[in-house]
Length: 576
Image 1 (cartoon, rainbow, N blue to C red):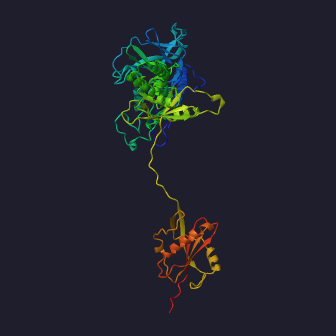
Image 2 (image 1 turned 120 degrees about the vertical axis):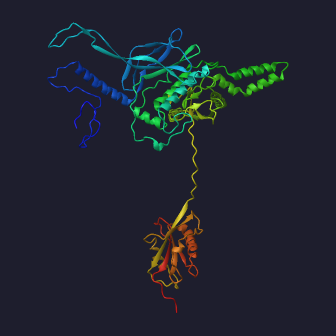
Image 3 (image 1 turned 30 degrees about the vertical axis):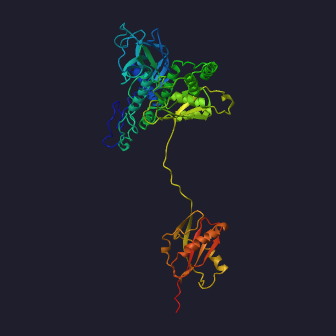
């Protein structure tokens, strides 16, 4: 089958493999070809399509730059720094100048916000005379624009999030980010978790595990969201911005398998850190005032009063007991009062205090709806602990269910690497606790396994004669005998009680055929135990006479304890 510019639909009539086009065409340069614009355009298009394919396969998002800030006297202008990004078609988007977008013409409506993104742009420029067909018209006097510039356009597109307007103004930035992240997860098409709250999870056997990933839709590169809160514009970059991360195939399967792509995890952490850094300063946060000093001064004042009202004394005592929590409130308000409704599964905080003060500070910071535990560690433990939280759920601060569990990682263990030593790192980390509960495995007691063999004796020993040392030595040389055992007796390790079983029923023994029973072990100190086990086993035979004689032999090269029953080969006729 020959290849053409049009894709084939299948194999030909002879069953040969189909050849299909890839929408990538290059010029077949040949001597004698008169180059025209279409040929040069084909060469450009070929190089561009290859670049786009490689760019898409490597991952999309922002490479560097494109930082968005609010500016203008009324705070209604967005300024975008130069940068480089790759859009969902693999096309590079680069700017080398500042871009500005005005917000003054936008009309806020309930639940509305705006998504700021960059999209490709092209325009022709320059002037040059155009020549006609060389064979017909050497010059027609017209002009053309010989150059084609590639850049980008910054767009503001309307979007909405139901329920945004009903939130308190202080909560809207964090709430919008949380809802945006959740919408992104849902659009990822998860297979192992609900696509939305309350929806059932479909059976995994009905999923198309054999299918490849869909082609990414051609969209721009989001770099920020902006919303109107009261009389001010509120900008949040990391709610929408995603730096270049995993290739599309990896991202698609991560979403399906209830994982969180790395660039999304990083964006969630950075969104929290950026909002925390932008929070208004809290009274005393950067001051050295300790509320316990104020309480002490008040206590001293009360002590100096001639008359000490009981109510005032009770207030001072209560303040003393609340001193650690008071330290926490000076070191920073609770995250909830700072407008956070949900946190990423990991992040970093600035919390002061030590010991009980620190524990009280972080408890007050997270609130009563979060179970907080303080953990001490070296600073180098923290990065991997944060990384391990990549696929864990976000942390709600107002959960009506069981409180989420969070570990506060305090890097106060000394390091042994000189360049990294510090008296105070100035931060603590928080991570959602990784917890699991497994069914207890049954306790399996160790056992001794003793193989039982039956041997046809060819020594010709009369059962009525005493067994001599020579005979015993000859028997011991046959231990363990060849061939498979009759079965195995299992004893709790170190014990001797006969375990019973069906093994005796397999034996055909009587007073005329049974000679003796020999226990065989590999250590002298275990010889008494082996002999006792063999004696009790022999006592279980139903031969109509007393139990046969039992002896023990030691062979240090043996790997397992055995019991050997020696039986006469050929039963003699009964007397008379």
